[in-house]
Length: 181
Ligand code: CTP
Ligand code: MG
Image (cartoon, rainbow, N blue to C red):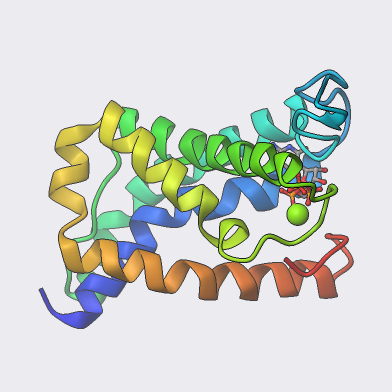
């Protein structure tokens, strides 16, 4: 695989994991998933993980995956690569796994004494990637194996924190997010 193909495949396959968290920021509010419950005097997840944010983020990711399928042939031609298309299992699993990874990270943040919005270096940047890859390998193992050759996986792990920092910085600068992480 050419380097360009590796990077293009990595970004393409993970786009439906990148978008949900940003959509959740716009849609957040309403009932927290943990319903206010605590564990050892700290919130289970906190007010930053809501049903609405999770549902809207997931739906946005599924919609994006399906939209990418529509333009994959043209984009593949333009880049002279073979970009992956998302079977429905992958279109559902990639964004849902991303949301679940982010929720799992909030659980860890609360257990380690971090308040809502506190940074957790490394975890904030990779939680949704780990969640997306794990759920995808379970739900769509064939597609996972076809799409994520080792260099592609490596590109995902290296590029994701960079893209995450950039998009969150932009969202913060636009006033859409309270913290730049
Ligand atoms: N959000 C949501 N539901 C989710 C994820 C995010 O409603 N499952 C919304 C919340 O309004 C949240 C915002 O998106 O405040 C930013 O998301 P994030 O940075 O993940 O949450 P934090 O508020 O920083 O909380 P935490 O420390 O638990 O990550
Ligand atoms: Mg946060």
